Length: 275
Image 1 (cartoon, rainbow, N blue to C red):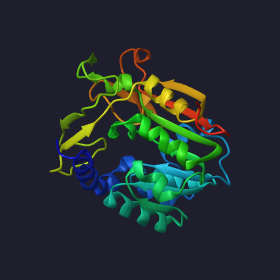
Image 2 (tube, rainbow, N blue to C red):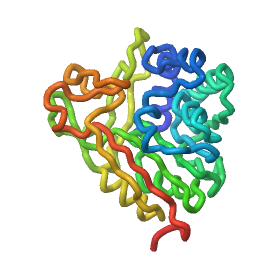
Image 3 (cartoon, rainbow, N blue to C red):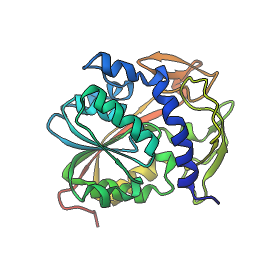
Image 4 (tube, rainbow, N blue to C red):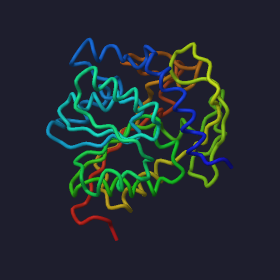
């Protein structure tokens, strides 16, 4: 198959300007209101707690709205992404609003090499990140490598149950990680835009909740929090969801049937990897 990074990077590069121009990312609000936070960060702010003074890394940061939001809560943030186009948007936004955020271009699996071993108090990963990675165990090793002993992972992600669904709430896709990706062709994106895209092929992987947790435990992390949510910050199932407030969407019919996202927190052991 075509290298998944090449296809996926082309997809993200093309969509970054459209995402920045979309009302869904509310880029203008960041300039208009110095206290404005992204919907994703605002959703989990009670769980985040006080992060002022922490040194944080935001992996797969895209156009940086969540990264800048975390900086506004007092953390010293570094955002990392493999899309040069997305980072160009992020750097322009940071300069526009006066946010002291560093943005680094690199593949997430190279984050420890690029950012340094054991340098961070907080690693944050937002919605729609893990599905682009073929190995959750490699990712977990990166998280543990970036964190100082006692440092914290904060992850909100699409639920693997949601990722296994096709049209009509039918479970037809993988729930567990598989060696081969799910290769899809989609000319759209998850925000409202009139842009016509030409980069339409993506390579994605689902990762079961148990696989994510076990990978982190094996990498020397302790699970400190796990919450499942019946909502997601995008219309994940078009035509079957309704707005739930705060930028969230949930099933219009009996939303308690489906976990759409989850928030996971874990802390790095002082002694490192568990044996």
